[in-house]
Image (cartoon, rainbow, N blue to C red; front, side, top):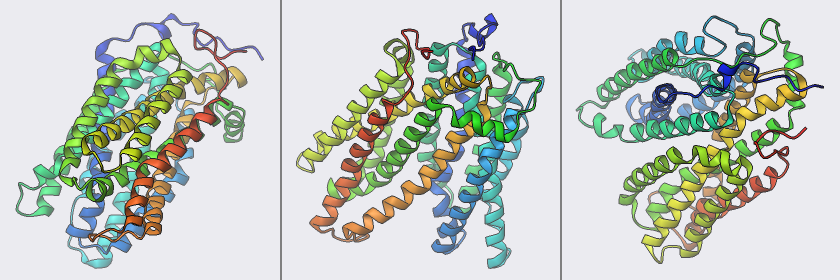
Length: 446
């Protein structure tokens, strides 16, 4: 099959101005400020403010995630058959921003409607929110492929995406300070959610108004059947490799980030340094990501991924062998490991747009929506598996909550934090060798 002419329009390769890149990044800042507050505080709000039993809260989160995961591919399919004057993805930002902000605010409302009524309200609002996060998140990440066809510009956009994602999570991690100003925690959470929801909707709208879809699929006038779309995905070797790696490193990150608080508390006996560590490491990561976009395309994405895997492996092994004998060195190697993990994400996300081009080259069909919905689905599965695995692994160590830990438990926490992430990272390194070959211009070889 002849490769379709992906770049027959010079507009697809024009230089993207800083304002547009910034606007794209701010969309992620708004979205991930919301996701960060959910990740850090939602379970606490449900149990300690809304008074929901932990078992019911956990069940609600699990069931809604499973429903959301089942719906996600159909959201992507719908987006691949969306053609408007604003493009394929941007309309979802325009029409989804306000509903997302409103539902997010309602998530942190504590209604007094009885035990059963509260459960129904919490389940309904969280399910709607989860679906809306997909409706916004999938097109926002997929917009990268539509703004430009230039690999260098895409890498730069991906850097902005990850930088502002980190800033969004960093903002969310500090919100407890603001919430603490209120005497009533319920009021504090609601006011915080109100401000954050309005801010997020504004930045997502800002992204819509200041970005432009330049890449137009050749099959725009045709409706793509779901069966045909699935066949396109199965034939896309680049996508299968990237998705498997994305799943594994997302599981790795969920396990490691969840285990770090135990590592700081019990292995290093320095829980007071945990917040400072997160702040410093995030700022360093942002600086690294900001300047590395061009480097990735110059060195090559697969080579940069392999180098990043080596960097974070050095961090994992260094922290493991140092143990708790030297806190300063342990913190240095832990920081190296985390920065390496973020670089892995940067590299793999720069490769996702290429899988869209690879699929079009192999089949003549572009399927951005379905491809990005698959990445969203892998992230949701990884989050569920990573959290469950962390709990299971802690249980096998004999971990004693809020108590003195045995040597077996301390060794187990060390392995969960460093050894297991090292093994999974090396596994992704091996899988990367299955990625289709590239030429000197970072194009797939025919």
